Length: 162
Image 1 (cartoon, rainbow, N blue to C red):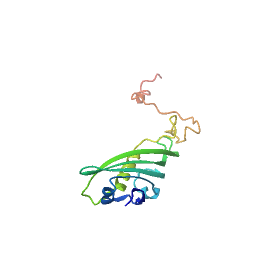
Image 2 (image 1 turned 90 degrees about the vertical axis):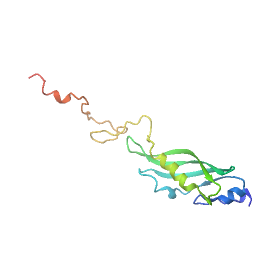
Image 3 (image 1 turned 135 degrees about the vertical axis):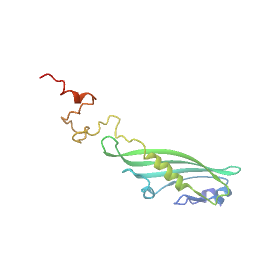
Image 4 (image 1 turned 120 degrees about the vertical axis):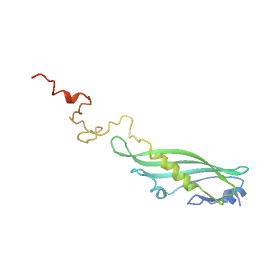
């Protein structure tokens, strides 16, 4: 089998024997974003995703190195506005030569799941939502006054002059 004739499986499950016969493999593929809808708890949605892979055959193991890149639609942690953010994450994994298959889809999903815990901000100067009326402070200025955060505020009425 020729290195250039290798067809990348859409499910990212590689035959270990093929990689050994080729003495390693470098490949890339555009993945279907619909395959990753079940891994996020928040309203994050993958819009585009590409994977670059490199397999190196070592004496007793296969070293898989990958880079995921793409665009995700995320929600701002302060104002809850939806926006698109580019991402790029790398991973490295060792597999035994005795394994029949190398499942890259599982490590891909694990790597993407780690992106979900990142605080997303639509801009570094995002003012967020008003804690009283809920308006987006980036769009309108409200007249709400935040309550006092002093632990002694409740004593104000007890000692005020009459």
